[in-house]
Length: 293
Image (tube, rainbow, N blue to C red; front, top):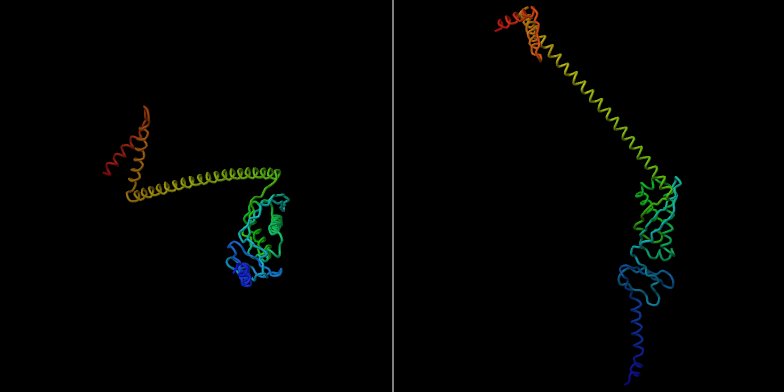
């Protein structure tokens, strides 16, 4: 038995085996983790195959599109926009997205990158057109959040998820930059003048407070001295009341002695003329002092 007779007798079995192998090969689809496959049957959507082993009907179903679900980045775009105060700015944007529903992306949009770029450009121009230049510069975080939310809503029908949409930079022309620099310098000069004026005002206030405090302390000191003098006068009056005229004479003589003592303690050599009444006052004072012992 030669090979031709063997093949001729088993040709049907061999054909069936080959057909089964081809069906298995065409019916089993292994999809990588980073992809999703869109299956069509006679030109219509049949299914979307996820990662892993999948089964399709051989010769009827075919994988029409292999879509990567990895995150993608659009090329950095630079577009013009005009603020409400008629300032032309060049906005640099960056967008990251990924496809989550390939059946929508395949059958609803032809060039997804160009569509997203056009959508982002329109939204950026619209949002910046509602704001003044100062607001664009100071509220970039809020502006970025608004643009991101609007882009997400616009591309939702395409089966796309926008993960990030950022404003990288807002550029101005040279004339606008020069005008802003002049305005900034003027504002700094104004703030410096205001700060200097406030410093002078504060110094005057502190000086007035210091003078008021000194006056209050002096008045308090005078009040204390007056209270002490009044107390001493009261004590003397009480002594006069109890001891009669002798107490008054004693105080007068004591003051005279103290005054003459102070005159005698003056600096330098000097001649002191003591009146006769002073000598009598010394005598009376010594007599009274002896009487007090």
